[in-house]
Image (cartoon, rainbow, N blue to C red; front, side):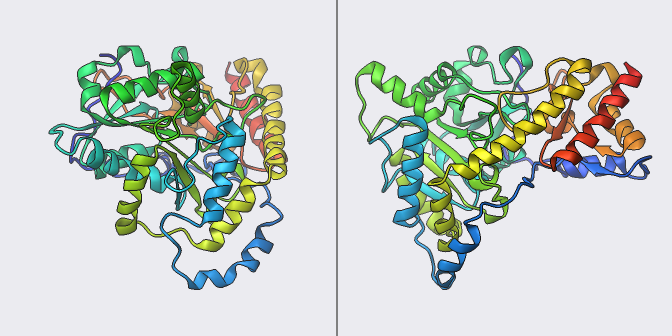
Length: 416
């Protein structure tokens, strides 16, 4: 096996600080030479959809009521309709048992590993959770609360920033209760192909683990809509001639939300969809451990999933900012625009480690970026797949983004 880490041992404490706390420590005491511009946070800043206030007002009385744990019928129908339109899944989504509302996709990502261990391998003595490296910190937290070992799989440029499946030891996969994969990837913005998803699905079924497909950036793309895990499952079923709604999504759960798609990060409304047998049991666990999603939030979400105009406008605004990035940084770094997402993942190793670049850039220009090393784990051999990169969020308004990237381009150019 290659690219594996045992940094997170079963039952051990997670790191004492998150990437942003580590960045605060790195920059502590440094006074920037120019007015600060914060480009670290992936918090959408585009306008809210115009319908939000009206839908909330029309449903405000429902804040008095406890919502059903499995969501309102209208919410489930809206999500199912969207999935079927987006991924050509007509008739395959179980609208009763195949969709769960979540308080943002993070909730599902956090608790999914517990449900997977409990349902699939309750007697496994050494359970593991597989995740990419770099990774969204919640994946490691999920392993921790499931009392499983997080095994990190390096995701590098030569593999399209996805874990290399061919290198995985079958014995390790037999221990796995869950495998977390994001597509579009965070932070790199690359996309898993249908073939890649298919390989993962086949591994999940062969080795009896849950595939948790984090697709929260699925609608923030440049030109081509990214393929999805449920889409791959349908194609696989068609090839085998067994397109049965009860089993077509076996061992697969996709997670998505309105945070990125609709600029509604504060609404905390998302969904899990896929394997109805798994989700119908998971909902019982959620009924004990998780809060319901408020019905007015579900009403906004249902409307949002039925409206594509605001999503198209949101995508257009991000793509304008990528054009600015290409104009300013392309002559220095080469092509910088990923397939999807709203981050730049820039190889700045010519100018030092990611921490050195972030520190100097803040001191000299006031532009705050996130060291890629803070989004990855250092492996046993001392390597860190994020060490050469910095992450820049393109969430700020267009002119702010242009100012920040102009400063960055000037700084890089002067030191090239």
